[in-house]
Length: 113
Length: 110
Image 1 (cartoon, rainbow over the protein chains, first blue to last red):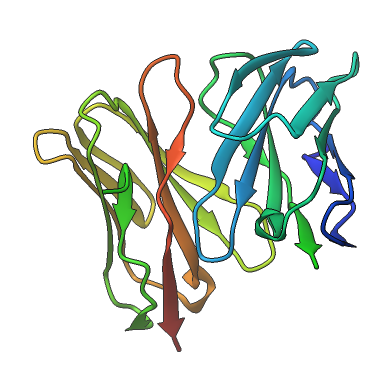
Image 2: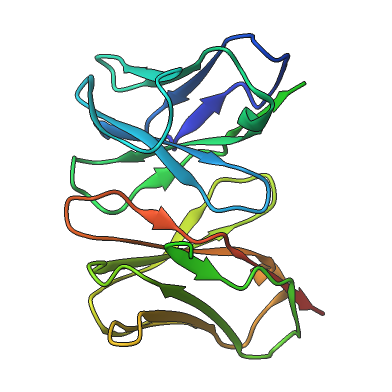
């Protein structure tokens, strides 16, 4: 069984640019959640996708958007990057919607200069 | 006041010590409580999951929830250097998404 994978591992962008982060969920998991973890902080919920539809969103502006594909992999897109977007972006997958047990990927470290 | 609070540490203990990690929270509607361990440069890994008040034990780990005090704890017995990590508590209400604490950094010294 393959765990949650994320790419890229690290990314450096400049302010105003756009970025796409990718996540492959654990085999058989149809629900994916994205989190932002700033240095020294706990993960903050960005949004969740279930069967290709957004199902819940945290307190993040619309320039944070996402997609889920038929194979349940997912993308997080961030437009008009700001310095404060520098963080570890974590993807977590769950077997089903409403399942509390979620499995995290290793994250993508984004640095905005 | 943040919704979930944790002492950020770092907490340093000698190998073999009993470690107590704690979170307080303000939302009395929280019913589901989790503890995650996060090693440096890795994603969080689920350690313990409890529902409502009470205790749960799994090997060297014991989770306690006191909803009347809005206080949860994770105890680690016979701590090992491999337990050195950041410990995150997370909690939620039914149908909602998890709210994480900021984490406590633990260092177990050999």
